[in-house]
Length: 250
Image: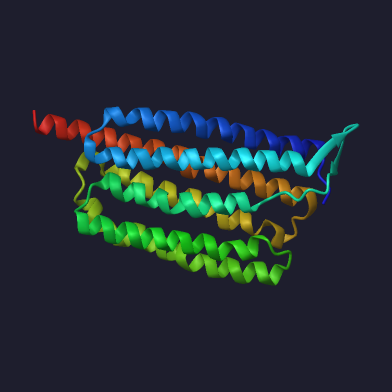
């Protein structure tokens, strides 16, 4: 696979930007715990944990990218060290279920609802990531399509749970935060839709360095939106609900 100097450094800079974004987001979310009521602190703790895990894995991804290629006289050459794409899937296996769990936690449902919905959504998210990995590491288009379809089954189930299964729970939320919860659902759907689209780039005739850089940058943009931006919405919900509860009990 041949990368141009521009493709190499553009991808490198996206990784670097993401590290900074996730670091700043982690500090912000964990410091923000002091601004919400106690029953929302766990949601913000998990929100910060998601970005911290992403920070660590993007650091490893950047290291692996640097180890896999070298710049000699303005030409990118492969060092013989394979770029380790598994870091992404380890990250997603940990963070994707947590993203759904933090949404459930910030809604402050009953204990039974929280456990059942968080468990179901978390397991579906983990299954989606696990099913996607065999396709990601395969160079065969047929194999990639098979695992893409397999991973889309839990993905569509998650979409159903978010927009149908949570309908009554959202209706029970204070009127002032319902629009924010809906935004969190739509942000999840839109950002998560990036992943299956990016996944099919190599199956649509995008090859070589163009495919590699497009896939890496596409996944990186999706991660920023799905984790850091989504986390800000979770923070806003927690703060707003805390303010409403304080006024109610004052």
